[in-house]
Amino acid sequence: MEIFSKLSIIVAVIAFSVGALGILAVMTLSVYERLIEIGIRRAFGATRFDIFKQFLVESTVLSLTGAISGIVIAILIVVLISKMAGWVVYVPVKGAMISSVLSVLIGLISGIYPALRATSFDPKEILKDS
Image (tube, rainbow, N blue to C red; front, side, top):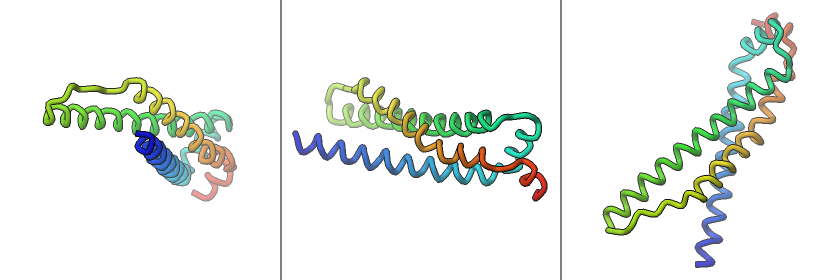
């Protein structure tokens, strides 16, 4: 049981790491695809902090959506296996809540670099080049 517990933790750490890299990559690409939007928002009065918050919230929502999807799929699999095996359905709510909180934290941490990158562009240069 101890080995299984440690293996579960290792798998969870790997899964969260892959998720963090995925969110980082998606949000970084999103920044570069939306340079004109960033420039227009800045030209119309949005502060650097407004842009920072926007990208940080987007990365958090992205990670929370992934967490909720994972929880729903896991519950469906547990119910399916329990019905097929004739077992009682047991869903650890505490584990689902912990994973949701960790996912939000991963989203926040992974969104910091893209959010800072989005605030580093000069609106004049962005709009001049487009």
